[in-house]
Amino acid sequence: MRTRAALTLVELLVVISIIGVLIALLLPAVQQARAAARRTSCLNNLRQLGLAIAQFTDSHGGRFPRGADDPSNPDSWVFTLAPYLESVDLMRICPEDPHRQSWLETQGTSYLLSEYLAMDLPEAVETIDQLDSTSRTIVAFEGSDLRDPKLVGLQVDHAHPSKWFRQNFVKLKKTWTLLQREIQPNRHSSSVAHYLFVDGHVNVIDEETIRHWADTGYNFALPGMATFNH
Image (cartoon, rainbow, N blue to C red; front, side, top):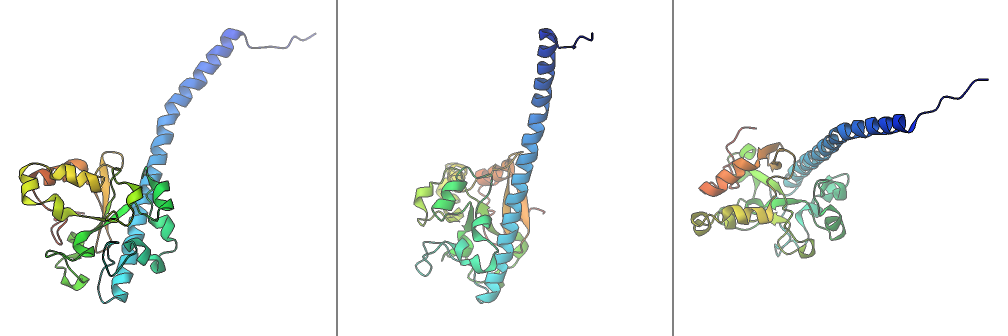
């Protein structure tokens, strides 16, 4: 009569330990793959928004969409792009944004338009034809984790770099702190973030570079001032 082989308790514990080790080895790789997928999705969102902005400017005499606190436009700029997007709700949210669900519920967005294209300022441009270089002008940033989703419509759909780089703030080394309240320079792995340019390309810039510009008072957000390669 054949006896049925069975694992001893020690053998079972060894098998469980091996499975645990394999899971521990595979988990970081799985997490990295998921993070890479979210980052790619975020980048693609910005590219789609860039195409929509280009179509918007073509249909509006070269003018860019406006910020939500512009008296002529009570809606967030991203919703004025809805006719040019397959799904504005998909495109306006970055999957890496910790407030992504709140932005969906409050009609907000993970991305901020540059005030130099969205508001009336001395340094701003009204139409795309006024730009010397579309490839060196940032049109949208990734919004900061410090933004409050409850303040949608109150200057949270566009960034205010003119305030970051005020002379007194630069002198007192406050620019970096102010900048981080509005944009997230380390949204993704390796401490980088995406920046959408008027010509439609998306550049990946590391946090260290942005910090250096902030501390030295170099306003990279001014039209035509983003001189790095892409």
